[in-house]
Length: 267
Image (cartoon, rainbow, N blue to C red; front, side, top):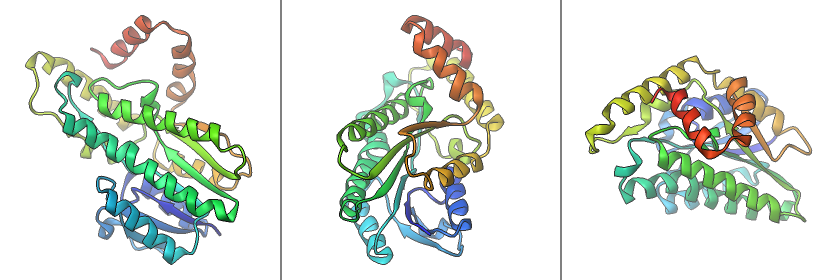
């Protein structure tokens, strides 16, 4: 039985992970901005944490740590997206995405490492996104934040030479969740983008609808936490998105990458 701290557990991938972990007998301290949204399950401990509020991050983690005694695993999963032309994104929108998707999770990594190092072991799983490598049009702040999180994760992996705390960059492709329902859409933008915004959103909705269920990610997480030497980076999702597309993308010049992604999204 492991003691696990999990962010973003009220729906989607986080909820699927919470159910899978508790089903395997693990104790999970599961966070949400509104803990009442977390289902009442055996071995599931709802915890309030708002990634947009640095004070809430420290308080949420430290309160859960005091209850748990220690954490074997930290899973940085919570997030949210913004959809709109990059040209019109305000500094507030960009900084908000980075606070939730990067700065908040970096702080939790630091707190997790400080708690795990004295015990000499631990596992941190950062759920970034394949969008950090294969950007989605009109989600520039989200794409950039996920890429930043992946880069920061690799930097820590380079530095932790003498530590038994393992860190994994878990990059899901499209997963069928209610994620799109919570995506904030720009309202103030140049109307010349109107047609391509509509085409892209239709493609995004279609891809999500046809994507694998979040149970796929949850099963992979359950496998990872039982491994003594887990891989530093994995992708989860549809075979084309996670295997074929990144392989082809790696060897293409930037001009062809942009052309291919535009064709993929129909713009």
